[in-house]
Amino acid sequence: MVCLEGVAIWLIVSFNSPQGAVFFNSSNVVAGRFLSLRDDVMEYFYLSSANDALAAKNAELIEELYYYKQPLDSVAIELDSSLRSNFEFKSAKVVNNSLHLNRNYLTLDKGRKHGIKSGMGVFNEDGIVGRVKGVSNNFASVISLLHTESLVSSKIKKSDVFGSTKWDGIDSRRAKLVYVPRHVSITQGDTIVTSGYNSIFPEGINIGVVEEVKSGDETNYLDITITLAADFSKLTYVYLVENTMGVELDSLNEAVGLPLHEQ
Picture 1 (cartoon, rainbow, N blue to C red):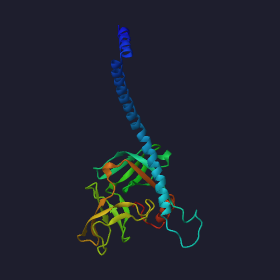
Picture 2 (cartoon, helix red, strand yellow; picture 1 turned 45 degrees about the vertical axis):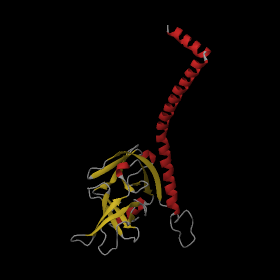
Picture 3 (cartoon, rainbow, N blue to C red; picture 1 turned 180 degrees about the vertical axis):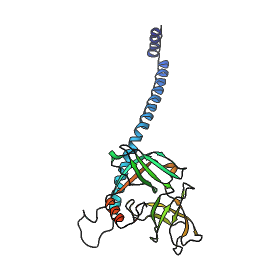
Picture 4 (cartoon, rainbow, N blue to C red; picture 1 turned 90 degrees about the horizontal axis):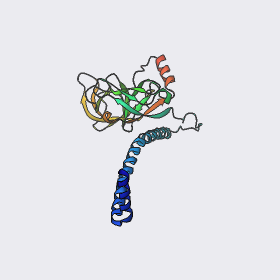
């Protein structure tokens, strides 16, 4: 019965132009929608791979950019010695992230087999994010900047005055710039960046901008609130930086009794 109905429909659309045109136009619409849906599904699955590749390429470009930002020495030297950057960059995707604890962590989709190591600094296109704490073969755990025991070696960009960025556990968009003496001139809107005075981050990575400055109560330091550059509620792809001379630097600092806990 079904076969006969199919034959009848075929005869109608084959030998009657109006009915045939309607049938084939309808078929084209259905087929077009199906193909469009198929393309959308395929594009969704390909998008993740494309983003991974783009993030990896960006990491390479960041490494090249940092290399070319290195100051030239005043004397002629070999290109592969003092002018060579001590930092290498990689990319990863955030697969887990906490915001509302006193000690927040992130999980990345790259691990030991991808070259990720404990101690690497983590940042995104907006600013610093944290530091790698531990790694497995395929994943890495990151101590977030939103961790009350985390200190980031920082400086005021316009004056190079040194301080440390510390989260107070209250607001995921704000932190404190601590250990800045009262006599220092600092105003709302000043940019805070990494100081480069450690083995974690290179100098000049964005941290945030000054939101409020108060005279510290019964202390020799200013009470400075900064708005963090990175929005931790929207982290997707991040970059990791490794100081290739970090082990040597840490060993030296340890030998002379300098603290190693500050990022």
